[in-house]
Image (cartoon, rainbow, N blue to C red; front, side):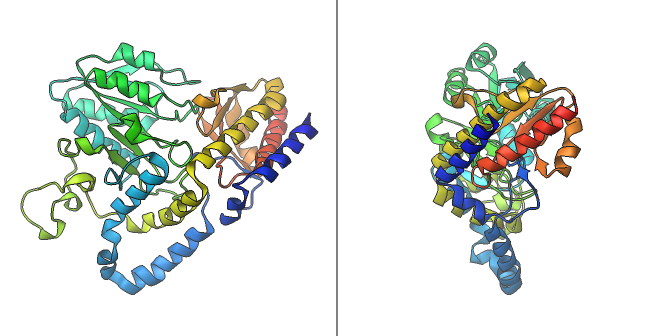
Length: 406
């Protein structure tokens, strides 16, 4: 069977229309990088753009660079990201801040836009930042958090949301792709349920953007946030993005009123007057240097196409499942992710007590997965930078180490 699996990996790589994109990434001294769902690899073009920006744009233009277009990057990059990956028409996405800060901005604005409603609905297994931010807002605004107990092996279900929301619900917050299991939520149906109750919806797209096609406008999403350092390869600490539906932009007011979100930032006047449209979500000076990689990454995504990325992602994660069933199940390793491709995001979680002890020997062997407590290894192959042979080699070494550490 091992020979058959290897032959399958070779055949899949030979038939892969996205295979040439692997050559666009900087080489790394590793055997198998399986953590693209946590930090994407850098592009060769990114290194070139960064050097050009520092030497020519920043070094050459200096302060004049702001009027050369830098001030518009949060909006122009947001529009392009919305077109290529998020299904959002222009004028609804801004690139700025971190995911945590943008979550705070949007969630505070949302609950304030539903005065008299005292409930916020969220799930127990969402990423810690999402939960922590909402706990803080609830304390600030005197709100009640209604917790849905989500199965860590799956995720949030519409039926659970229907049981939790009512006429007192201001906001619901969930992740499109669950960070632990990779469960793909039914966004349109959950939105429908929340909207029937009069609540707003806020979605975390951190594990979706650049991996799973998103249809924010078509799905009726109200607000969304996400990061650019995972499948979008923006680099450590790359800026996040926020989506605010057109129809809500005149009524929602974010709480961090900085000069860049002002109607006329350079007037330096008294009193805050929000800028029209999505620009009002800005606060301080945009992180221009950190936005440079997005230009290269969005160029690559435009060429590859998000649907092709998703097709390969499902093939990669399906191959992970096959390898896990053949090699790891006999070693008491369980799959803690959806097997149904319609409900599976871009990564697969494998679980066995004591898996944390495998991280160091795996890293020493050149295999880099991700780990999430209490006992889950996340296998996150990035479709544009990961080959099927690389997945095969990584899981083969995982099998060897798992056998030694039973």
